Amino acid sequence: MRLHRLLIPVLVFVVMVVLFTFFASKKQEDKGKNVRNFFIRLYYEGCRGNFLIYADALMQRNFFKRGEIATLEFDVSNPSKDDWKVVFYLAPFDKPSIRFKVGEGLAKAERATRINLEVDTSSLEPALYLIVAEIEGQGEFTANTEPFRRTNLETYPWLLAILDEKVAWSSPKDGLPELRVPEGLGVNIHFIKPSYLEERDLDMIAYAGFQLVRMDFFWSNVEQEKGFYSFNGYDELTKALRERGLRPLYILDYGNPLYGGGQPPRTDEERLAFSNFARAAASRYGDYPLWEIWNEPNIEVFWKPQPSVADYTALAIRTAKAIKEACHRCVILAPATSGVDIEFISAASSMGLLDYIDVVSVHPYRSSAPETALVDYDRLRSVVKGKTIVCSEWGYTTGGTYANRVDLVKQAQYVVRKYIVNLLARVPITIIYDWKDDGLSPRESEHNFGLVSHHWRGWELFFIKPSYFAIYNFNLRLAGYAPTKFLSLGHQVYALWFEKDDSRKLVVWRAGSTSDDSIELELELDAREVELIHLFGFRENVKLQGGFLKIDVTESPLIVVPRP
Image 1 (cartoon, one colour):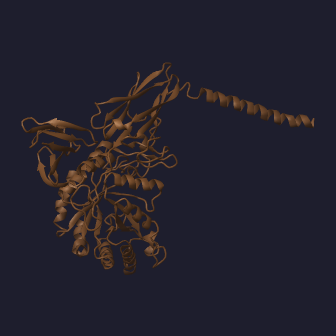
Image 2 (tube, one colour):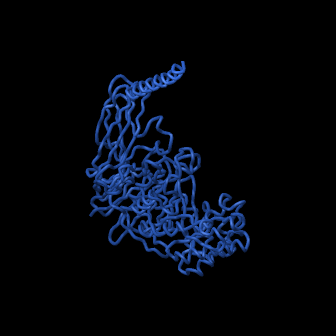
Image 3 (cartoon, one colour):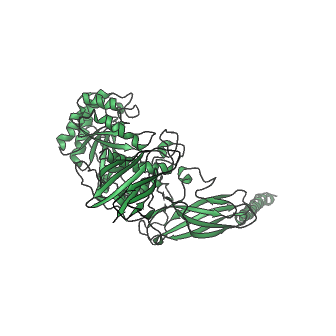
């Protein structure tokens, strides 16, 4: 009887194991079969051999140095009873009507099928391409379908970027940048001591030709015991930037729990402590960084409980004096206002701020096109007593509910145009916000300002957005060129000549929207033909007729290169 009682649980256990094994094997056998819904998604994009940029097969990326082999893996769920033929094409992002086949596969009936492709990029011109999947009887697809659109990264179009050489330009590492491409162009980052993946961020920042990197220089990180300063993290970041020919723009900010409960400094003791911290930083790094005093003190988010021009100006003056005592050649920027806040800057000027700083910095955020900033710069010049104006932060988001939300193409157009607008306005520094998406939610505006995607940890993903390629292409084609002559051609059409030595290139674009996607323009040029370089790298040669060039002008800046 005792043996019988012992055998029962053993038998039950054995039966359970047999049943589990049967159903598990059955599930494995049926895996992919009898699918109910159609979907297609890009499962993997990267390089698994012949590396020319990063020798990491696990790293997913959509950019390739010309000559690498791009590997693409797509999952296609086919609920029908017939197999589907799937044909894949690449289309220049500038000219999607042009396409060429790069592979095909078969989506098996009643199951999900993984289709693998390899693309030899040595046969492709450097440009940004859209990947198109044409599925028999289902239509064309250029992005993931549901249920694979949960994150912003998953909603982006399938892109394949072929990079040319790195932008070759080295700006002086002291003083103010000159009005020359790509001097004075930079991005915001949000890390101090670079991790393995953030080292790659810095590589790609330098590859695109950026010269400046703006980052918070946190008081609370540096002074964690009164009177003692530790620069751990910032030493490593500064070294990493210097190795890549990048110059830091450090923002001396925010409160410190050791003083005033972490609120912005308001008393003499707190201002003295902050200025001593700034003096220590300037003593350590000298004039290699540009130094900015605080970030957006004119809004409550960064100056709690409410902004005070008087308190900020008192802090900025004391801090500027301390920096100059440590390093008289250091360049000091302030007040870094949110928007072009004429009232705040005028009030600070009346309190003596401009006598102690070198440059007036603003963040000309707006929901309108970049060209509208030209009027704001003109108004600002009337109150800054001849001081140079710089743009130390400006961006457009591609998600969420902010008023400056735009789509991916418009973000790319605006990234290049705000740089051109600033050059046109003789604003020598343009810092683009932000380097990378700060998160994965398509509903959070702060997650979507980046030029590149948020990097998923684990199986690492590093995908560029169209805006990265657009500014890379602009810098690559115009490195070393300086703006010389502006042409206002009516109908919100702008043209700006750039020159380097005896070479000239014209950039033409349209601001604002009309009922037409483009405007036909006729230009008289001293040339037989021109090369047209489009925003995303597509190039074509056009012959002039009777000395006149006829082109369609869109909101995408077009580089016109005259040929004798």
